Amino acid sequence: MRRLRNQLVPVVLLAGLACQPQPAVPVVYGPWEEGLTLTYEDPSLPQPRRSEDRLQVRVARSALAPGPPDLVQLDFTSLRGRMSVLARHHDGGIDLTDESGRVLAQALPAHFPDLAGWVDHGTEYRVIGRAAWEGAALLPTTSDPVGIWVESSPSQGTRRRSLYLPNLGEVESREERDGRWVVVNRLVSRGFTDLPTTHRP
View 1 (cartoon, rainbow, N blue to C red):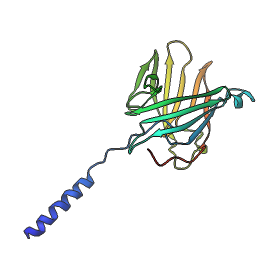
View 2 (view 1 turned 30 degrees about the horizontal axis):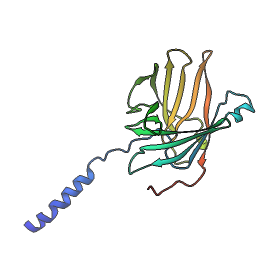
View 3 (view 1 turned 120 degrees about the horizontal axis):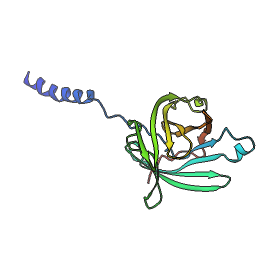
View 4 (view 1 turned 90 degrees about the vertical axis):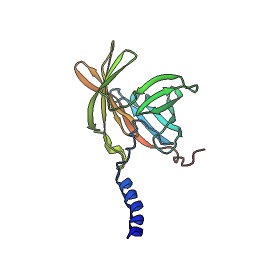
C-alpha cells in the first residue's frame, strides 16, 4: 500500500502542475514574420496618384527566440525611396529605433492595449475599443480580424483613428475631415516576398 502511495504522489503532483493556468502568449500588434510584405495606399487620393503613393513594408529581419519577438527590421519602400528602421518589441509596446538603439518614435506603448490612454510628444492617445476589420477578406483565414481602434489627438492638427490587428499592426487609419472620418491609409495587400526564415543564427 505504501509503495502504491509513493508511486501515486509524483503522478498527482504532475497532474496538478499540468492543470495550472499557463501564462498567455502576449499578442503582438505589429508585423514580425520574416518576409511578410504589407502594401498600403490612401483611398482618398485619385488615381494614378493613389497607386504612385503606395507604401510597402517588408519584414527584412526578425531576431526571434521562443516567445514574442524582440527586434525586427522593417524596410519601407515607395517610389520616392527606401528606408529601414528597427522595431523593438517589449511588454506589448513597440519602439522604432536606429542601429545604435536610440528611440526615434514610439509606435505603441508598453502594456498595449491594456491601458485607457497615453501621451507621446504632445499627442494624446486613447483606446476606443475592439472591432472587426471591414477589409479582412484579404487576410488568410488563420488571421485574427479583430483589432484595437486607437484615436490620436495632437495639440495642433487633425484627429486620427487607427486600427491595429494582431501580427500586422496598423491596417487602416482615418482622419477627421469636416466632421466625418475619411480613410487615409489602408492595407491593400498582404503576402510573402520570400519564404519566412526558420533558422535563427
